[in-house]
Image 1 (spheres, rainbow, N blue to C red):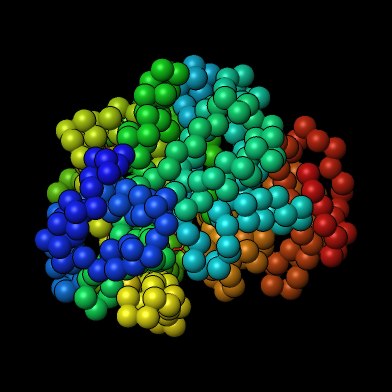
Image 2 (image 1 turned 30 degrees about the horizontal axis):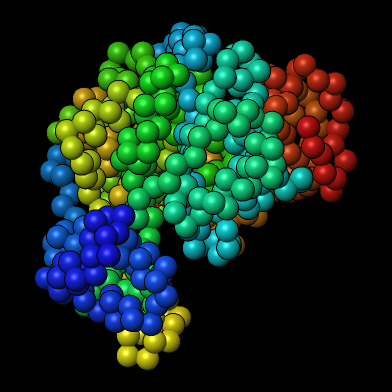
Length: 477
Ligand code: UTP
């Protein structure tokens, strides 16, 4: 029978046999014709020819990371802006926004396994008082940018094949959060097969389905291209993307100063730029912006040797201090250039995960209690060294970084709510409002400020504010 991929069962079997993966057809005869076809189609999308190299590099041998020699901290545009003109870059960013050259881009294809939430993470509640979903937090920022600059800000959202339909349905259900349906574009990222931790073999997640995982946020740089999103941007005249992740409701989804620096700073090639925050302590688990061979790059915390982590400058500050918060500006031309030469391939990173699988011996689904598989992912920041030059801009942690990663502890919904309240409290205090605080300085109230109301303390000057917030109260602005 001719299938969509053009491959027959026997051709598929031959391909699998030469890759040592014939077990994927173990239950083929038990499947109904529809499921048989789906399995053949899925296998056709897997680059089996690449497998032996992947298994060798990431399963048999855990390829060691080679730290570049002569590693220096990356320079950055400091928050105090003493050596650069913030207003000049804000004006440049605003000009690009008014000219319709900026789109928002959100990666939302992750699996949120650490959070343990069953569903697209963007549907998880993000705000401190009204529990707005994370998608709404970002949508409100985009809507308010639209009002401010009197220009549509198209929003591109990357999903994965595992959460695409649910994500689109969520937006439909919520009437696109007030945005125009025409200006919100969804596209799905690619997947990679999960590999058995011991053998490197592919696993079946069901009798008729190979276990796969989304190919990482770095997969976005290819998916933007293959999905036609870049063509859509070119048609609309969009030149730069403001990249944020779905799990940080504090992210300034549209930031004129950052846009201006990316587009016009003398040392920026306007290809890909990044935001950083000063690390909270040497061991904080964030990647660090470094410079090697005149290129900016992020070194993951697990790859930065301890002595470098702890190195201090003569004033006592950490030298490798620029923590990555996964906020970037990326130009449409850069993504086009990366893809124009054929298939873009960023380095892959391995993680050991618990992946449920069908035991070929029994046909039963096994729920592993310990990691049994290697998941491979590309990271978006690995594109930084591919830029001609790339700049880093410092932002304030409380102002912009409260990711929801874990169910509790660090980077959890609870810490995110606390940071949101702290940011709002600072803005209100800057306007003379008395905010109740505990002996250790923690606000004794919960405050939520929508980006439709304010982007900073200054915006609050347009409102009539109460002189004081009652202790233990909740306030929404
Ligand atoms: P994380 O690296 O925190 O991964 O994603 P995650 O999948 O959300 O969570 P865990 O690791 O399973 O607990 C950071 C951002 O990158 C997106 C996520 O949706 C989040 O916005 N992402 C991650 C993708 O879009 N695709 C991926 O394949 C991985």
